[in-house]
Amino acid sequence: MEILKYVVIGIYIIVCLALIIVAMMQSKDDAGMSSAMTGSSSNNFYEKNKGRTREGKLKRWTIILGTIFAILTIILSIIYMI
Image 1 (cartoon, rainbow, N blue to C red):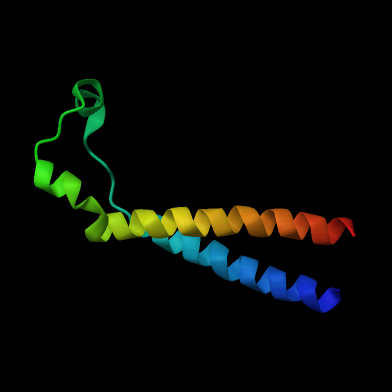
Image 2 (cartoon, rainbow, N blue to C red):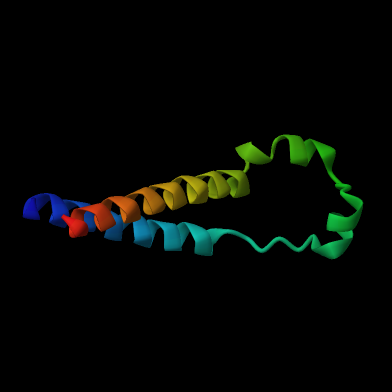
């Protein structure tokens, strides 16, 4: 059980560092409150293909790494309770 604990901690540290790096690489969204109130976009083609851009890929990886981070946190808490 000790080996499993150290393996999960190693993976956890790698995921933490990757999550920090990916989150820091994202650009700041400068749309502001005016876009939130009106819900309009100035470039409709860009909004439809946002997942294919660099920002879309970074956002997807942030969500994936955040989910893995949460799952590993739960697994580590279960391992330490045993």
